[in-house]
Image 1 (tube, helix red, strand yellow):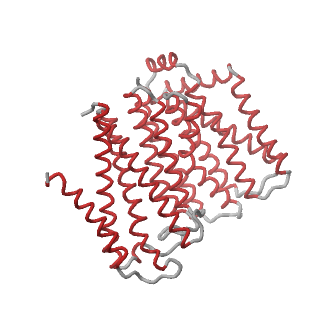
Image 2 (cartoon, chains in turn blue, cyan):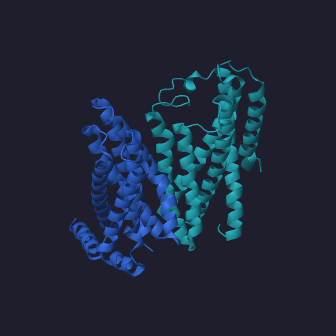
Image 3 (cartoon, helix red, strand yellow):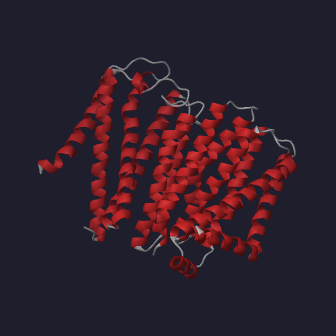
Length: 218
Length: 219
C-alpha cells in the first residue's frame, strides 16, 4: 500500500519535472477541440457533440497513456523490478493514468462547453458514466501500453492493440450519453447501463492485476 | 489408426451430411428469408467453430502462463490462426446472406460490428506476435494479450448485442425470434453441421501445429 502510494507520488513528480509532456497533451486536446469548432461551427446537434466528445477523449487518452510504460527505458524498468512488486507498479500506473484522464476529460468537457455549448445531458447518468469511462479507458490503455512496450515497434502496436480493447467501453459510453440526452432516465435503465460500464472496468482492472506480473518479468 | 482417426471421419461425414441434407430438407417458409434460411447451417456453424477455436486458444494461453511449455504456445497461436480463418468464413457467408435478405453486404448491426472488431483484435494478435523476436517473450506477451482478446470476444458477441436497442439477428436486442423458433427438421441438420465443423476445425488445428512443430523442432 505504501509502496503504491510512493509510486503514485513518483509519477506526479516525474510529470511535474518533465512538464512538456503534460503540456503537450493539454495543447493537443485544446487544438483538436478548436479545430472541431472551426470545422463544425458553433452549433452542432447533440448526437454529433457526444460522438466528437468521446472520440476526442479517446485519442487524448491514447496520447496521454501510451507513454506510461513506453517512456521508461529498460534500465529503469529493471530498477523498478528489483525494488517494487508488480502489483503496486500496475496499480500505481492505473491510478495515476485514471487521475490524468479525469483531468483531461474535465478539460475537454469545459472546452466543449465553451466552444460548442452543453447539450443538457442528464447529470445523474452522464456524470457517473463519465467517471467510470475515464477510469476504464485509462486502465485498459495502461495495460495495452504495458503489452506494447515489450514489443519492437510499440507506437503502431499501441494503436492496433488498444483500439479493439477500448471499443466496447467506448460504445457503451456513447450509448449512455445518448440515453442521457432524453432527460431523466428511469432508475432500472440507469443501473443497467452503469453496471455494464462498471463491469467492463472491473474485468479490465482484474485482468490487468492478474496478468501484469507475466509482462513484467524478463 | 481407427482409434485416432474416428473423429476426423465423423467430422467429414457430418459436414457432408449437413451439405446434402441442408439442401434437400423442407424448410419453413418464412417472410424475407425464404429459402436462404438454409444458409443457417453453414453460416452459424462457422461461428461455432470459430468460438470453439478461440476458446481452445484461451485455455492454452492460460496453460502456457501456468507452465511455460512451448507446446502450449504453439497450440494457442495455432488455434487463433484457425479461429481467424473460420471467423473470416463466417463473415463472408454472413455477408452473402445479408445481401439477399437485408439488401446489403454490410448493415450497422451490433452483432456484425462486434464480429468485425473481434476479428480486428485477433488480427492485432498476429501482428503482436510478428513484432517480438525473442521466442519465450513472444509466447508470454501474446498469451497475455490473447486472454484480453477472448474477454473482448465474450463481451462483443455475448453481452453488447443483448444490450443493443435493435438487431437484425435473432434473439438479440428487441428481435424476438430465437433459436427456440428453429423447427425440428432444421435442428436435425444444424446441430450435426455445427459439430462437424468444430471437428474439422480441430483437425485443421492439428495439421497446423504439427507442421509448425516440425519446422520449429518442438515436441
